[in-house]
Length: 369
Image (cartoon, rainbow, N blue to C red; front, side, top):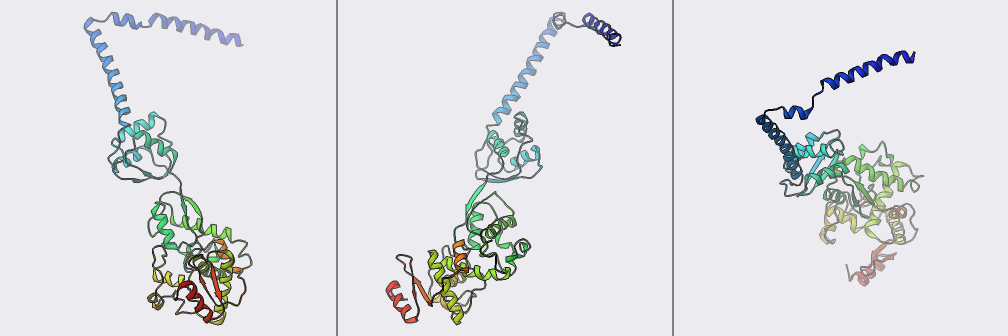
């Protein structure tokens, strides 16, 4: 059966081949048979097409090195699923590129048109189409930001705004209510102050403020998981407030634990805490960077954080403490001291049990107060 099927196909194939050979047109015979004038026109037309194609290619290639007219850094966002056409014309509208058509042609010619990564980019002046297209295929750059120990909520907000991670003020608008379901220890928190764990974080330009806050609070939760394992969620805020005071007042881990004991002693005796850092937090509106040294006017100023005039703990944390400060707050060193000060020369903490002793220490270490 295979032989019977193959024979007609073979005959048909041979017949078709012979027919093609009989009727095929030889281009050289066709060209030589043309009138001389038509031959000249035909050659001229071919050369024109080749020249135009080559010229167009050279033009597009040249345009890929032409930069836009932006004189300052442009922040540009590629939306998820956005195509090369809207990207190109968006870049042109912002002055980043001079020719959107050249950008589109280059992107397709290089196989990049479907590989641009969504995200927000910081585009410097003078970038060519070639460099820009390569940048958009790599994806938005990561930004590392260091949140220093003891930084306040407003100071962290300023750091994030400086690096383009969030608009200024965006972090301040995130409420603990938005995160309480995930983090029960925020149940009685009035603010995120104190719960943004100091560390180095990696973000992108124009992040979601809630995502940024969640990352920092998650870090806090991870680092304090064992420390607060036995503490009811609604009691953790108290430890964080004390830790935030320790972070701004003393340096060494042992001194932190000692001062935590002093704070507990003064609270137990109903004494005002008289902690300068808390007073300055209120006087300088939650910002220590650039804040002045404490003055008599600050001590006389009536704010919720004036621990000279008010008894008890401040209403909220005054900084975002490190794990060592949190550990000191939870595990203070019991002692009989009621007063302390820091030696400005060494940073060491000097303790005393009576006001008279404290006055002598002030004169000795601070030259009076």
